[in-house]
Length: 263
Image (cartoon, rainbow, N blue to C red; front, side):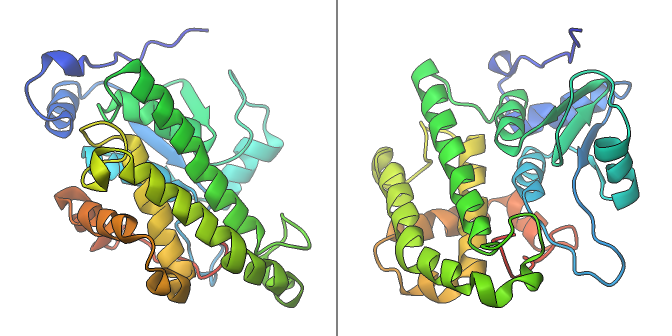
């Protein structure tokens, strides 16, 4: 089944993508809302941003309203006990608009980037963006796995002692390699003084921002003592100061990092 999403033509609008999107939504109040499905926590358990934060940053920067569903019973029914209609989604995060559903974080980010004008201009840059997008998600996946050395689907708190050697090894060997690669990728575009792809903000910049924030939060000493990534540190500060993102980070909508697994 082909679902029409009424994609807006950004190229013919002189306004910024965020301004045009807000105006377009206001003029199209009958269009279905955006919904983000992501894991919630039972009472007494500290909430965490998780992979859903990649998606939230795109909505926030674009100034696009969305509704988030975190109720575990709803998610359990949707993903584990109910036969889904249409194209199947394996697990959260998942976005929905009308009948259209999409999962896999890196794919969601790419899709929303194109929807909201956070998209590279040339075909070559679009593919480079995809390469870096997947690299960023590989990075955070490996970082998370270090906190789950015995069992990747069990809580970190059930394997703290057993998985500590994996965490130590990740911090000592893998984390510097990931950050060095990202520093090099940033420097390759305009000497690292602007964005990571091309001459405008794209969804990949927002993904990079999130993984850098997660790195600093999870490994503060390793982040602070690393003198070989000045461009990444400046990039993180620069993007965090963007008006929509700064407002989000200073709001109650922004949940602090959980404290393990880069989540």
